[in-house]
Image (cartoon, rainbow, N blue to C red; front, side):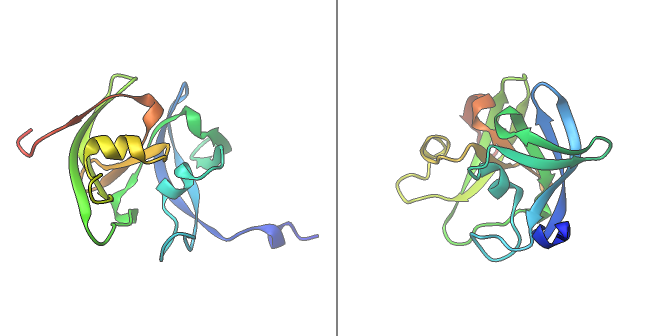
Length: 158
């Protein structure tokens, strides 16, 4: 039997993942060419927020590994790969303090239900394990809620 016949075609997407206790892991994750939730290819956020407990990451020097999502503190990738929501998008300027002592500042850009469009609602209502935050014009981070110590709203001036 041909092993390639069972493979599902996927694309490699470059990421930087901070994994507890390993630290920084640089490599590629496998995304579907077509998302099951929207037009276009699958995003890293879909992989980290699906029900599977593990995901595959091909390290630059370590080869293929399978990481437990509970151990991932955060995962960063190029913002050009992020699907921007359409419709009434809430833009929430945010500061996150993580258990490892890091502080991340950025913007959450998501379609949130009317009446539940506050930062508090986003971090509590949604069942997703990872929240998506745009750190800069170049980088998106997926942050594991279990590693967040404190969340603050920030204003334009800070």
